[in-house]
Length: 283
Image 1 (cartoon, one colour):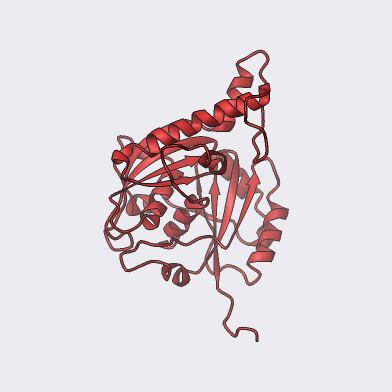
Image 2 (cartoon, one colour; image 1 turned 30 degrees about the vertical axis):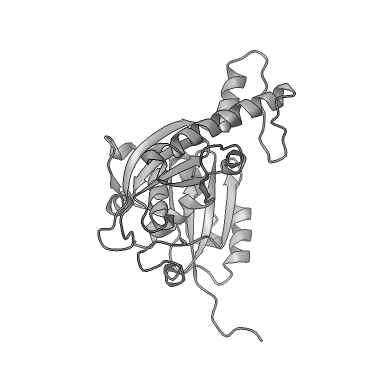
C-alpha cells in the first residue's frame, strides 16, 4: 500500500573544491535533527544523494538530471554553496542552469564565525572546508569526547584538531578549531614528480591500479600512498595523545584507509557537505 506521507522536502548544498564541485541533497531540518541524541551527538545528517563534477565539465546536464531524479518536487530552501576556489565558484555560478533552479547563495563567513570558535593566529585565512569539517565532527563524535582529529584527503590533505563542546546543538555550544597540518594530496605529489623529473610519468589513482612497486607507475603510487598514510597515521593517531575521535574524509580517503597502521578512523565520505548543511540551516 503506498504511503500517504508527502515527500520529504530537500535542500541542496554545494562544496566548491580545488579540482571539482560536489553537491549534496539533504532531507529537511526536522528529519535531520531527529537523528541526534539529547546531547546533540549521534549520527549526523547524511546526504540522500550526491553529485561530483570536475570544474572543466559543463554543470548543466548532470545537475538537471540529478535534481530531476532526486528532487522532483523541488527544494524547500535556497541552495547554498561554500568552498575554497573563488574562480571555480564564479565559473560554476555563471554556468548554472537556472531552469533547474536559481543559483546557490554563498554561505556567509560570518555564519561560520558564529558557529565555530577559530583559535588560529590568522582565522580569516582558514579555508571554509576545514571549518565545515569541524562543525560536522562536533556532531559526529560520540558524547564524552573532548577532541576530534579530522584528516581530509583531497587535492590538498589537511589534518586538524577540534575541541568539542559538550552539546554542539545548544546555544553557545561551539566547537573550537585549533588548526593543524596542510600537505599536498596524492595527485599533487604525482604531478610534482612528473613536472620536476626527466622521466617519471604522471600516474592516475583508482581502486584497482597497482601500487606494489613492481613497475615505475606502481612504484610512484606505492610511494605516494605510503607517504600520505604515514602522515595521517602520525598526526591523526597522535594528536591529543591519541584520545581524539579520529575521522577520515575526502576523495582519497578510500585509497588511504587500508594503509593506516596506527589509527582506525571513522570513515565519513561526506563530512564537508554535512557541515555545510548544518551551517545552512541557521541562515
